[in-house]
Amino acid sequence: MRKIPFVLMVVFIVILLQTLVFYRGMYFAPPTNLQDVRDINISSHVLGEFIDVYEKGDGTVLFDFSHDNNFEPEELNVLASRIISRGYSVEYLKGNKSLEEELEHVDSFVVILPVTPFSEEEIDQVKNFVDGGGKLLMIADPTRDSEINALSSNFGIIFWNDYLYNLKDNEGNFQYIYLSDFKENSITKDLDRVVFYVSSSIYPSEEGIMFTDENTYSSSKGIKGKYSPMVLTDDSKVLAISDLTFLTEPYNVLDNNQLISNIADYLTSSS
Image 1: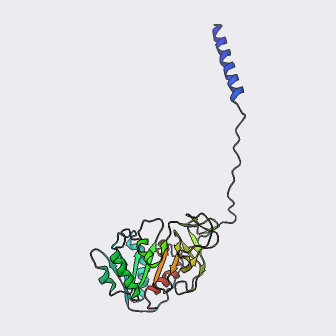
Image 2: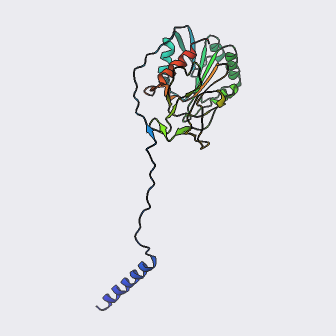
Image 3: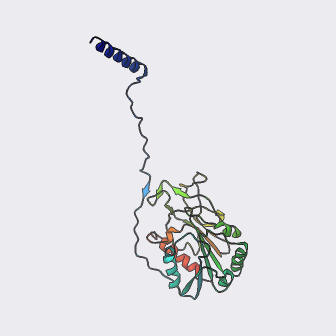
């Protein structure tokens, strides 16, 4: 019976020695540095009534659906309805239709997120279309795969492999950036503030017509600066936009509706 107290005493001594050697006191977690949110503005804009003002015309806008384009047809509903209201018809390039033949009777060509690259022959056909007075609109989205640069680079335009974000002033998400710095032209007419939801920078920025504020970052550069997610060539024949979401409901808030109408005007006017 005496062995049991002896064993207990040995166990107690061992535990005591381990405690003296390894114990470093109670753990207190370091203070957490919370981000100061006082300078972050979060908006809660809702879709309001918009009155579309336009002039009637006559012509055709062709949308590309022949390059495994990475978007859903219903995402074009708002833009397509604005084009149709201006008296223009909307056609779709699908299947085995000849691009060259289709471009012969249309006024504007819209290319959105092509996954299959345009061939050299097709690129030449699009270039001839623009040289002949046609308008080209190219739209990309940094969250969706596409080979848009295979076409856009032939017009001196590159959609950069980044996304733009703003931690200070945004539409409730750091990728939902505000844009209020505009170069005056028909695309930016009557705009005060728009919001792009997932956009990248487009080069050359010298041809930009819409710019971020100084608190906007590029994910690839990691520095703040003025970036342009929308550019228009000097001859006003090629327009490039890096965001598709702003064209769709319910994201046509603020002056996005006006911007959509301006784009519809651009595609349906001869100037």
